[in-house]
Amino acid sequence: MNKRHTLLLFLGTLLLPSFLFGKPLEDITLQLRWLHQFQFAGYYMAKEKGYYRDAGLNVTILEANNKHPHPVEEVVEGRAQYGIGNSGLINERLNGKPVVVLAALFQTSPNVWILRKDSHIASIVDMVNKRLMMTKNIENAELVALFYNEGVNIDKLNIIESTFNINDLISGKVDAFNGYSTNEPYILKQQGIDYITIDPRKYGVDFYSDCLFTSDNELSQYPQRVKAFRDASLRGWTYALAHPEETINVILADYSKLKTRDHLRFEATEIHKLMVPELIEVGHMNPARWSYIAQTYYKLGFIPTAHIPNGFIYNPNPPKDYTWLYYALAISLVLLTLIGSVTAYIYRLNRKIKEQAIRDPLTGLYNRRYLAETLPREIARAQREMTPLSLVIIDLDHFKDVNDTYGHAAGDTVLQNIATCLIGSIRQNDFVCRYGGEEFIIAMSGISMDKAYARMEACRKEIQNMITTYNNNTISITISAGISMFNTHGKIEDELLKAADDALYKSKTNGRNQITLAQTKERE
Image (cartoon, rainbow, N blue to C red; front, side, top):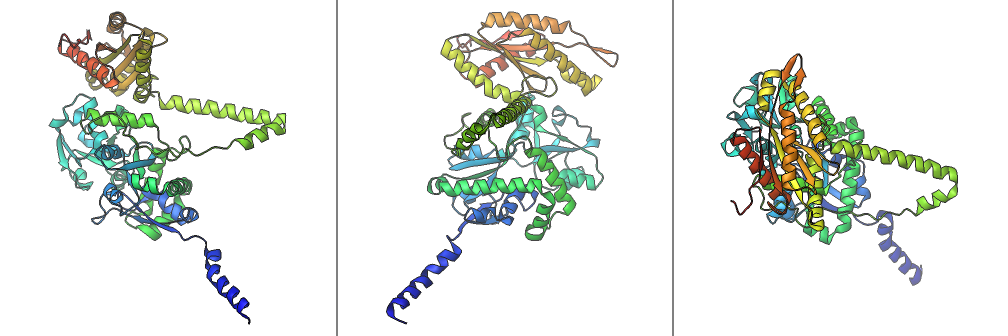
């Protein structure tokens, strides 16, 4: 063999591994916020099905334990590149922790109050002065917000630090237990214990949960890796939701046997309800929803501002190439007609889904989410066009007595009749929302506060004379309201809402069944 052949053989030996094995995988760590269970199924399946490997990643998935208790600390200090948190991530960002939320997996939080049915506690108000077990941190803000929305002084709640042991509820040591709708109810069912849950959503509090996040450092240094990890993770979640039995097999074989197969099945079913992948894209985040969450934290005094911090929400902004669509449209008129029909159907479906997302299912009125999205726009328009904008907060007087006397079904009928009356009292440019429980909000654009007062006074009289018939019972009710006006009482939504709420409080303290105008700053 001559020297030339020897050199070629040597170079081939050096280059052969790169041709055979390609680029080495990048090692990264994902820190979970709890123990291995179906709550993190998508990440297990992204690894199991090779989605991470296809993205060039070798992912280590760590459960929370004494060594790795806090995902935010693990990610910020660089021991992990990615973590799982909840809506409290916005507080971490405002407190100087450079976290970036990549996706919201649970469109609704599983965090609920769980009570024994024989406790005879049926509402938030009934829980006042009861023994409430939960962890006292921002991660349970939605549970505290329930009391705030109902006018309960949260400083007077009897909160016991959680042991995370449902037996404390079973034994009667506590009256209410902070748990997950995806977990503890299964244990109670297995033991034959009747229970009820108080879900924040029913009181107008709707937070994201189980959010995938990273750090500013990871995003700035490895933007393509962030996108690849996010895409592979969401792909894993889509697979896990579609193949729960296969996913459960993987969890039991490779991660944890702490839960039984039936318990994991229960968890999978409940998580599917929280993610609703048939209607909402897996991982979807709405900036307006984050804004609403920030406003709730601000009202509770958890964060210093109601604004979303810069750099908090990740924007994948993938470039979309519609060239293939244009070519396809040019092929034939038949294909054009088909695509047009499908597009129209999808458009109508999306409109229907969006409408359902912003409507209160009981009254048909707009809900709190719609208010959070629309009120800032109305304020901006009033400022831009220099037109008046009046805001009204309405509360039903002694509504709890209606529920206690005639039952919640009768109370629901009263709420529906009130909603019909309110809709009849507004103009086309106004909108009315169910704010939570028995509270309503009306935004009246282009109308002065005096005219708004006249309209609401007429509405108050109409409701005072209104009779609701339910099961041969005649029910009467009155309303109290407070009215504020843009510029006179504030320039942002929080200021307007507070001014109207203060006026409502005066209506209540002055005997109810009346409308009160917010006081100007000069009068105060």
